[in-house]
Length: 226
Length: 190
Image (cartoon, one colour):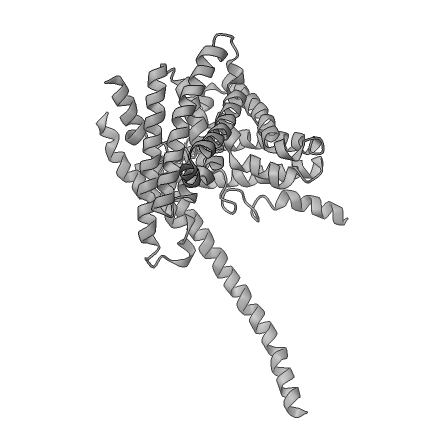
């Protein structure tokens, strides 16, 4: 039963607890570059997740045969192979999306999320756990790109996934779909999430202090009695 | 004239960091001191020019004639990794002061997406050899410029009273956003 729970945790932690974009600040370049629309964000996240899952699986399978000194080079070759697959499939099946994402599909090779998970998790854990971890981190990345993409597409072109949401009276904020908007959105999101987490932490700390204060007082009273 | 346009376009109009989002990690990581920002920028420019030369030769003299374009991604990344290793060894042997100034930044450059992005873009746009070298030089100059300006601003930001939740990465990103707005002013140049 406990084993089941820990497996579930390997998946679950990637979505928020160690979210690759907001918590580990990895893979910033694609997060900023492709979130002009929600669709691009989803495509990018799915391609990254595909590469992440398969490279984690393979790295975990061969982790005991790779000498420690050349492991990074070996990881990069494995990752590059899967990125090539993703790139060629996208070019053949979704030429328009591939054109919209530009060099960012081949650039998944140097996305720090993938090498980061390979080094921190897949090189030390069993294949099954590595796949779960990769899926979780991919989902976390998808979540981040969805949030970024929705905000930018909604404010920048009044739509989400191509459907108009805001009325015609709303003047689109063109800056949101320009590079500057990407930096601003990401910075504000990160700042507000920090603010929320810090407030939560402070409240928890105060509760903890309040909990521990009572017994202290009791001890003092007892000491005085004696 | 053509070469000048490529240089200016890569350096300011389509700045790698502020307009194309390549190399954000070092941009945020190494931009807290002007001196280290300059060293990082110079090391990156150096590797960019070398990468432009080597990847042009690899792509247009080996991969294209033998119809092996599908090997582009693995071959580029391996060549860049080997190149950076090689540069590090040469600098260590030739000049100790230069190694001390650039040495720690060189391993970081391998996973800098600006370098691989440069190699992919010059093969995508089918530049000639000379154009590729100038493109690498311009991209490096633009990267150094962005990093240098950013580090100057961040040194001032250290002294200001930023809300606690926004300290570090968030305020840096917002500053980068304003800087990107300023760089949009160059868009009319070409």
